[in-house]
Image (cartoon, rainbow, N blue to C red):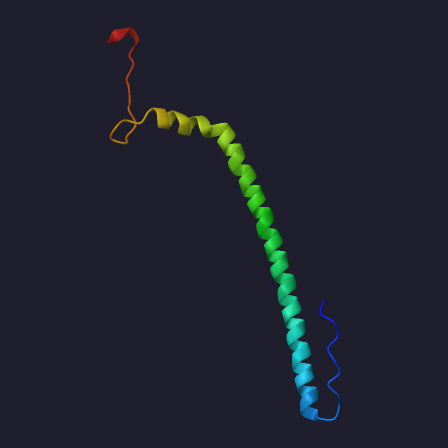
Amino acid sequence: MVSPLPDCGQAEPSQQELREQLEDAVRVAERFTRRYDSLLREFQQDMLNTSGLLDQLNRQFGWVSRLANYSMGPDGFLQVTTVSPGGV
């Protein structure tokens, strides 16, 4: 919260108008700051959730990417070997 603004005096009406505009601007800035903080917290929580989900997927399906890495041919494509029962 911003500290109270200094008293600009009541002598000049233009000073009072400027003070009111400044106070309005401070209120708007504070509102945007609160909204920014809220959005930042939501984003951080979403990132934590996403990281957790990626870790879980890696634990469950990491073997697929490891298998693909072992099966790569020199041309960058997967090598496929056909195995037939009985040698046919």
